[in-house]
Length: 259
Image (cartoon, rainbow, N blue to C red):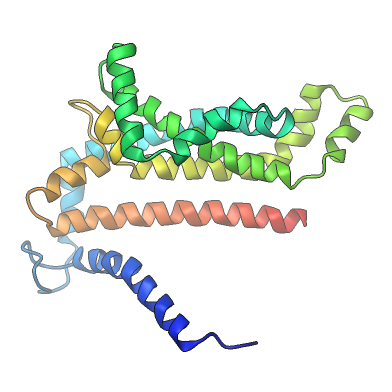
């Protein structure tokens, strides 16, 4: 096996350091026994205990989890149907509608949804507007995952089910859905993760009185970056990482099983 050039290894190391060193610093300083967070003083778990006693943070965490759960469930249902439609019937307009929110810059999507909710729907910004916004940008990610899974499947399987007397619904329920289930679960986990971490679109559509974890963290760092901010950021990063790993394992495990 040929060894990689030294300059390429150094460039890769510098890139990974640039990406991950700030995250490592956030995690380390979440255990810092100093409120100023300017230098390392000692190890403590007090900031994680403070999180459990912070009512505003707990409410924001509850809102984030509830919004992520509702929006990802609806987005998974609609995204799965969109993925099936793009693969089976291939309408020219459907990929454009589904993929556009994925490719669109978040700030543009956030402003567009804000204008749509206020001027066209006359909707008061709050929990519902955030859920609808998260569904909008999550559908495309689920559809892409489901469509990619369908593209790698043998179409003769579905034709055989129909030839054996199965109705289209029975073919979907007994053949198609079990085969695409890991992709559906992976799409759900991806949508849940994206919703949980979203700040920009939530910032434009949340309104007054609805706070999520990213919004609460933003309001805290406007004053100072305390170890409590580092602690909640660490927990949020850990949850996101676990969901991403789970989605990746499900997808890879199914691909190996079907190979």
